Image 1 (cartoon, rainbow, N blue to C red):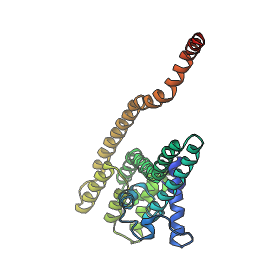
Image 2: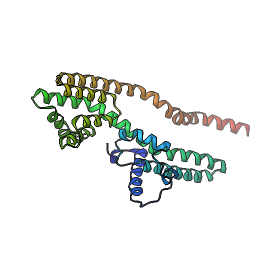
Image 3: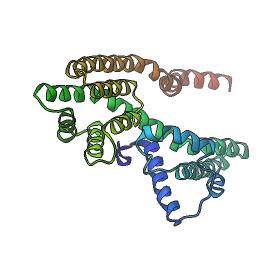
Image 4: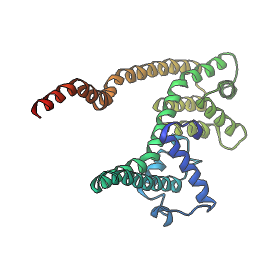
Length: 271
């Protein structure tokens, strides 16, 4: 998944972090975050968290730890100012409360964007893993080598996971890395246990020359079943997740609509 495909406020925050990364690298903009100014962005709490999730989100090359920390600091400051300005229209106490809320929401936007990207990439890998395995197994049954079969999937399918596979295939085809290293890097770039398990099996089979076709077909069937189970779980959890917005937004409005006339009549009777 590229940065342009990230949606929502979190995706906008990640793209802002990528823009700050380029500007900080070229020194076109000064750093405002204390961690970035002291050169400790990578060792800061936010920098360490981002380093552990950057590869899974697919934005490690576009967003550095310094850009991530700088984006969080600037968005947190902007949120605090916006919240304080709105709260000043009501009271000083409300300005303090909304300022703190704005700082928390704004500062956490890059982290939420990275988390959303990790989830989307993981879901993409689980969704198309069985497809990739079936294509490679079909190529092997047709007499093609593993390299050729794997390359066919990356070149004939258009999705984020297929593009990652094509990139891995090119990297070992031109000799930048070995095939085993490219496959393991592919697995390490996704937060997907199934993909890691499948890649480990492929590497072992290729190393020792054991039959691979039936193994891939069995893995494809298992991957498809696990993905279907995961989707069913997400659908089952949807009504539970809807209870919070229903209770906080719809229910008070319904109570006000039903009880409003009665309260107005009671207020008129006491006056």
